[in-house]
Length: 324
Image (cartoon, rainbow, N blue to C red; front, side, top):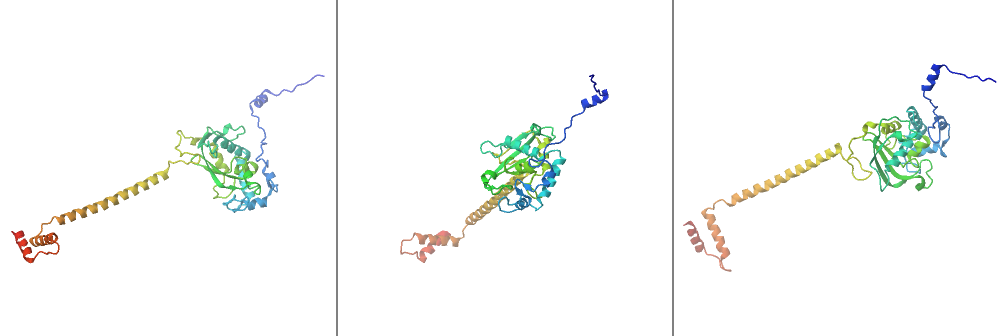
């Protein structure tokens, strides 16, 4: 049976050859929910209902809560999630990818390691295999970590063993312009885990631990902040930059204090010196005859034997001798 072949016109074949193959976006937005619709139609997260999560997100000291609150201003958790999901989707990335970048920074910088923490790293988002963020060069990121005495319990499972799901570390990333606080560690526990699981970055306008997704992307891709010289750091991973306007203000105050103290000391010394010079001048004034007689009389009294007092005749003779 004869076979027939179909051949495209040359111009269509050329267009297909140069046109990029665009695969449909099938990457899930988060680990637990591929789309916002799935999250919206769910009854909760990891066994916790939305009502339970709303209660735990409020400020408090109950299991699963934080002192300032996961959502500090009382905004409903679904509303907070909806805003951040829209923001991340509009940037063309996913919560899973952003969490993967934070995991990579955690692994490279080991900021909370007791033995070998790094004060900064040069991070290039293009090294992540699934990266979709645009940048032209690496960005220098400064790291710090704080170890706390207490254990922060897990938002999703607060009644479990705190040492298994909780954490006692807070670490920061900054590029001298943008700074983010991260409670916990990598995506194994803490806020990075919540970002990965269901796209939760905390909430509240004045919550210092909230991570704004758009600011996070700017932090990871702003290559203009890569400095040519290494900064001066205090020893340790939890150090901050020591050069800044605050340093010059403190130095100015110290110099002023030293100047005032020196001026006060000089004024006190000058006053005592003047008093001594005045006293010396008073002692050097010549004595009159009557004063000399009184001095001789007192001297004779001091030098007379015990029980004998110079007579008036002796004193008069002494006065006559002094006058001569």
